[in-house]
Length: 261
Length: 136
Picture (cartoon, helix red, strand yellow):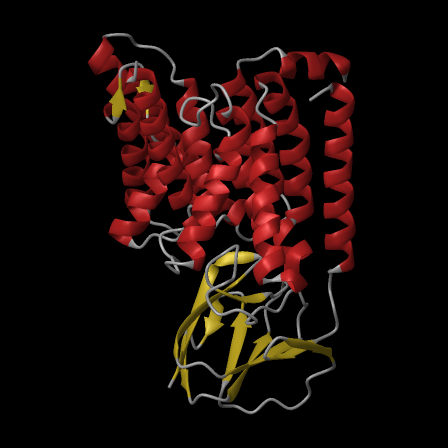
């Protein structure tokens, strides 16, 4: 057990996240023999599409042919969040949007948007594809267990554990204000845990410098509240839209701070 | 955040999640009217304004009713049902339209629609299964 734990903790963070998402896929698929085949094809399709598109885009642009580990995470996230009944061509295009955003919408060394969130939101906007968070909805307790245990190790290593805590804090305040009677059921939602533990602290696009390491979670939560409460945004998924807006705004703020004398 | 804090955080989160979901497991039947939840066995469902949930999804997938009408969702699937307003997972599109727990085969959930509009809903445990109630 200790050996297994050591193998996990010493891996590249992207591989660690991919392992956590792989475990999440297992606990989602195993209890449902009736749906596992179609869901597995959907998930594998998403993984292969993301890996191939990233491999080709990186190879053609940089003339380096390397295994794209970060595309593993993107592929898993698209496969686990996009509804399994989504046609494969739509899953493919979602992966194309996601990986393209990583390789093409960037400034200098950094891409701006969380790739999976970008692909899912664009796909939902263009094709009305269903962002269902299916993989964590069927087995909520096991999903939360896998996410909290697995991702706490990863986020502790990256010193990003305050990010999900910040978002959950402001989300709890929002629920206290607007829906106090359903606070526990909303707060302990497995879809929310997938969002705050995996998508929110994506260390390439979520800012990790200075106070942002602590405040980015609050920032995304505040944008979510505004979108939801003032603009009644329902579709595309308000959690993902909040993350993309926060990615862009924090990027602009940090850039302007750097460029000012 | 030290390792002790981390362990405490993980243990506390898991304990909360486990307790909460264990407490909100299968219930015999649930009928909700404008946010109030009552536990009872629903024996007589009118044919109209009833949506049946099977392994194939909600049927009919769209239903039109007058404001003030109760719609009953009957679980005839082999699994559980948790009817909730769009959008997953926040369910805030139509506040109160949320079963708030999973119920097994043979159970039902009713909600009285008082606000006109087109209200989308889904099964919270299988969010790809969706339907619409149009309230005139």
